[in-house]
Length: 151
Image (spheres, rainbow, N blue to C red):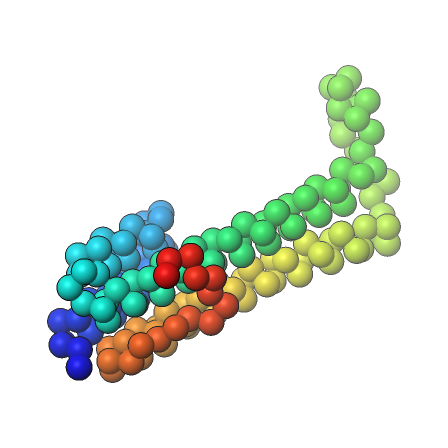
């Protein structure tokens, strides 16, 4: 049976990831600090600290992949019809030849990647809240779609 202190530390480890909305990289810094304070003394805190960090690292990886899909697809769509001679000669860049029909596939790919990214961020928020509630009740929670970087 976990003590109240262990439950609180594990719960705050989950909730500390929400600092990403106020402090850059707060979703990594604060969980590492909370987890490292008690990971040797409590198997419950150790489990939840690893879950939090694995989840955040997985989301980072998924986000980077989605960004690497979205940005090039938009750039390819926009700059496919631009003459680079006009860019070299410092003339005005003209997108008058842009045709949505020719670029619908790449634009759709970029839009889908952005929508998945948005859904991932919304799901992250609600999963963090849910994990915090489960942890406060003394349950061991495991995030879905998580790659186990730390075992």
